[in-house]
Image (cartoon, rainbow, N blue to C red; front, side, top):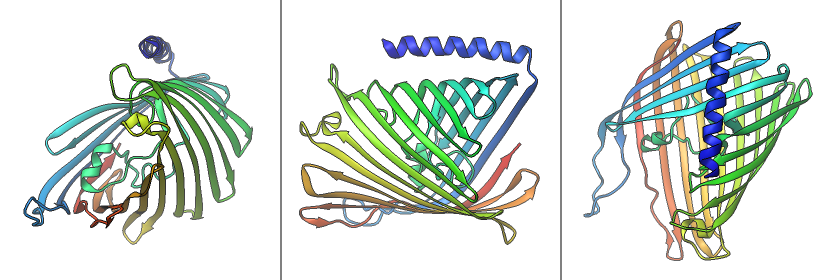
Length: 345
């Protein structure tokens, strides 16, 4: 009930805010970014007879529409993403919010679908990633608050600040209804940027009439600008969730560690290079033998052709190996090599 009331109130505020800002807009900006790729996907799995499943050609299309209206200290921002893979299309309102700059631009309040503590590696190739990209091997599963709520950002100095947020909805893992309270600190020290965050959640398991359980997440990220056209970043996150939320033993925990390294080099040769190496490690507190490790190696090379338009070549790999008391199984998962076009207007 709380989620419905809060969502309805937020929607009404956003619509009213958008109307007022639109009527007196001093600054209006729109952008559209799109990506269409075709690739050969090697699923990296075996059939019932133990034979390798055959490789196949597939298409992957993403588009993202962003808008921002600004009037005085008030702004309205929205982002709509459409994703198409395997003849299945999804449409997601990834962000829509109304904000007020109390001390422009460092002190502000946002209400709507908000972000807090977003990792540096969330968009490693410059285009919003979607969870559906995993079928090609692309990594896109970072924990970050992104739901209906309210966020406050406070500037501590010209290069340092903190933010705090309360959200309600499906929270970070999409498990049942719940609420979340989080905070994050950020700072810029010359070529070095840093972010530290913590998030605590209360949410329900995916069963009717389920009790509420807790989860906590700690995050740190750093990004170093090697030069004006080259940077490297590291994101590290630890998460712990009550095992009951996924029908696990009472009093136990599902634990996860996520690490990603991203290297960006603009104008390396005729194009821009984006490289990501990441690992996701899952363990169970009640079974010292169990461990699941997914390893991602993603490479995108973008060659500009005209203003905002270019050719993209990608190599995407995801391999998952599971360890149990019987030993470590073979690593399985997709490897994709492909190419296509991208554009931003």
